Structure formats: structure tokens, C-alpha cells
Length: 430
Ligand code: S3P
Image 1 (spheres, rainbow, N blue to C red):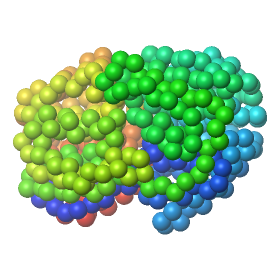
Image 2: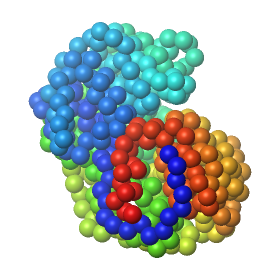
Image 3: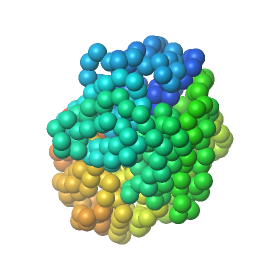
Image 4: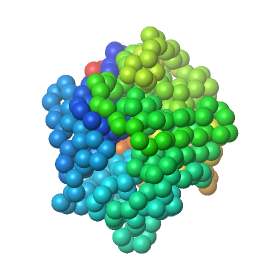
């Protein structure tokens, strides 16, 4: 994709459905009784990987323009897959599905693409094995492909060394199949869509956390059936983030982004934009399908640097690529700390952000758990290597809009992972 600088992005847009919620609705709908009707499902490649896995597990899932319909099989109704399950690029699919597969009465194998096969799976293998699961890394390298054979699961109390919604969700899903309660404690509360949705499907779930409390514990008591429901997925704040940044950075812009999920475990980007001096207004705040939603009005602003560290990190972990681009365009220095998890995403995002910012002429230094960016130097067009990481491709597409000269985003098709209509949405603002 070839891009150059522009001015005056104006208009009203909507953003596709939230990726984390879309994945979970396919999974929970599949193991629920009855039908789950989903509106605004994200038809990105990651969520389609989840659909494909559940179809191979015998679930009937229909899709048309307006709805995704899951004919649930109940907790014990999945059937043995004839082929290896393929999670594609999706860590969420691999890790959450492993929790469900660990509780089934049949054997299965799960793999993914070359990026996913390098991502750490010991973080789920260890707690699942502690629960009694027979799950292993086939190549004994702590990564997928994984082999899961049937076993009896026991409830545990697991203390996660890192805050990870994928690990938490995996353990809670296995907990649905255990012989007693399962609890997960994480250092800082990670996104809580699993907790909100499992409760609304009928699971017996107790959350003792508060967002800023040191004890973030969720307990699931097995025994309850899940029941299908009709539900609307809010727009994905992680996708809205690119248009928030575009509205702030591109001169003479005013963008209204409708129906965005602003769950407090996901909305750290809004606080950071505010700290950087961004002109952002939340309009029409409401709750829809159990999630906080708002329309977000963004106007061009002069940004300044900030420090981003500690408890806010899990609430904006996927937005760090675009925050780094904003920091490179802001006056002064931005420090990002406590974000070592960036190394374990679709690419090593400390490296992929720093290397591409350096290519655009920014002043950026990597650190073991983040980076230091000093803005105020104009960006210049460059060839961007997203390394097949969708969030790097989209973040640097925004950088291109404020850079001098041409930028070439290589392999920009990887945006289909989470936001297939990303470039089309821009057309609406020209
Ligand atoms: C996700 C959780 C996050 C996030 C990922 C989606 C989820 O990962 O980076 O894109 O849907 O649970 P971790 O929870 O492992 O940090």
C-alpha cells in the first residue's frame, strides 16, 4: 500500500465489531444450549479462524450480511475433529480454545501460522497441566502445535505471573469442566470480556477484583449450563485507535467514531490521548449488551509526550504501536515501560515499532520493557516492514499520513486479521 500525507479528515465513521468479544461469542455460543445470534460480528481473519475451528468441532455456524448465528451444542456436545484445528494468526483462538479442548472427552491437535507457532504457550500449558490436563507442545518447544488428550480436570487456584486475558480465559474455560471451583488471580486486571460474557451466558462466576486493587481474582464454579442469547458487539476500540490518532495528528481534522466499546479494561488509550493533550470528547455514553459504549469525537491537536507504565499497560497493550506513532509526532519525550508483553504479540512489537519508527527518521530507543521516543522531528516516508503484524501495518499507515514523501506499507493485506475495511474507512473521511 502506497500512502502520502493528507490534511482535513472529516466525517462520521463506524468501526467493525470488537475482536476479543467476537471470538468469545463464537466459543461460548458453541458450548451453550440453544441459539446465539450475533450482530456486528467482526469478519476478520482471526475470528474466521475461530469459526472454522468450531465448525470442525461439529458446530453449525451460519453467517449472512447482518448476523452470525451459532447453533450451540451444549457443554458436552462438541464432536471430535477429523483434522488438526488451525488457529491461523490468532493467539486468542489458540489459548482460549485450548482451555475448552482440555475439558473434552476426545483428543485433538491445534496449530497456527508461522507467527502463532512461535508464540509462548507454556503460559497456558502449565496451569492446564496443574488442573490435570493432558496437553503438550508436540515439538517440545513450548509452542503450538499442541496435542490434547482426554483427562479429568481438577479445580485450582492459579496466580498468573503476567496479566493476560488469554491465560485467564483459558483457565476459566477449563474450569467449566473441572470437578471443583477454579480461581485465577492476575497482577493487574486484564480485559474482562470473558467474565462479563460468561456471566451473561449463565456461568457461576465471581469477580473479587476492582480495577486498581492488587487482588484481581475470578472464580468459576462448574455445574451451570450456558444458554445462547441475542447480542450486539460494540465497535473495537483497538481499531478505533487508528482513527483517533489520525483525527489528532492530521491537520484540520474532525472525526466522529460511532458505537465504540469503552470498557475500562480496554480504554487506556483514551487516558493517554488526554494526557498528551488530545481533544477527544465522549458522546452518548451508554451500556449495550453489558459493555460500556460511546461515540468518540476527535479533533486535530498539538500533542506532547507522556509516561505510560504500570497498571494502565494491560488496558492499552494492543494500542502501543499507534501510541508510539503519536509519541513520535508529539513535542517532547514519551516513555513506555512495563510492556515486556509486547515481545510476545503477532511480532516482537518492541522491535517492529522501533525499527519502523527509525526508518521514518524518528528518535526512538528500545528498552527491555518498552521504548523511549522523543518527538518533534518530522517523520519521513519510508518502506515499512510490518512482519505480517496487522497492528504494525495500520499504525504505520497513520504515520504515513503525516510524513514527508511516500510510504510503502509492505504486505498490507495483513490488516485483514482484525480490520478488513481499514483502508475503505479512510475513503469515507476524504
Ligand atoms: C486478547 C488479549 C490480549 C490482547 C489480544 C487479545 C484477548 O492478549 O493482546 O490481542 O482477546 O483476550 P493478552 O491477554 O495475552 O495480553
